[in-house]
Image 1 (spheres, rainbow, N blue to C red):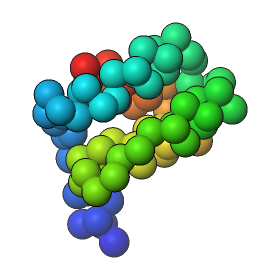
Image 2 (image 1 turned 90 degrees about the horizontal axis):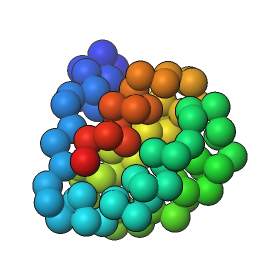
Image 3 (image 1 turned 45 degrees about the vertical axis):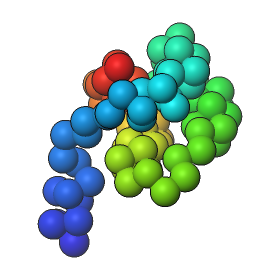
Length: 81
């Protein structure tokens, strides 16, 4: 279990293609505070990560940051661009 958590919390490095996919959503997310859960969840639900492992991890980490109200992690993830 510990190894799985450690793997998920590895530094996420987005490729240029990943950034293109996320850009429209990131712009919206950067205007929201971590406690605006309903609005953030709406945006997160729109993000289609397909079979992209990095984007799946990024999206899960973002969800975890929001639901745990971790503002530092939230900002870290949305400012990876």
